[in-house]
Image (cartoon, rainbow, N blue to C red; front, side):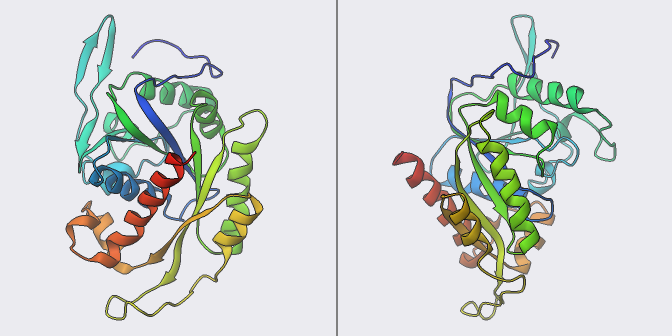
Length: 271
């Protein structure tokens, strides 16, 4: 990778039908878990799916897919070296985590980080994709703005948890996309950790972090609450080990993400 990219230059991914930016106003709301499992769900529906881990300072996707030690192969395309994504569960995956030691911190200022991310997108052989899911860093910093400027044909999805603070920060993330300088539509809100459901009592719901936050945010944005994903202990246990929820055989784990993927598909098909 060698070329320098102007921050304002748009990256056109002509072979990608839909690019979805998965965002959150703050960390700790399960954004990466939602992005990963939605990508797997779309792949299971027969779609060609790519997943870009754009959180340069805290890449989570290699851990969630248990591919931390993987390194993408490269091929020559003219004078450029083009990276071939790592594929798992039918999803083509690219992350800065593949290109550095997992213990190393990324100590890059905004322009360097933004340029590195631009090259990560541009110099990856995504092939033909129905969906490119982008797991963005939390917040509204340089990298988020750069991504939104460069992937102008994208749509955004905001992930929150029900707490008032998470809702307030989610609104800021959404308003970044909606700002006139970016003008990226927010297609909906995902409320993660909406309620706790014991595995042995699947009909019971306990609203540990309050309720109604996702609905409030969707209403403020004049958008849609796409999903309410329950807090289930087994989700954390599976993702920490890099195992697919869809290998568990537990419908309670799978269904929320299958429903989210289907809601997304229907929404995009009707636009």
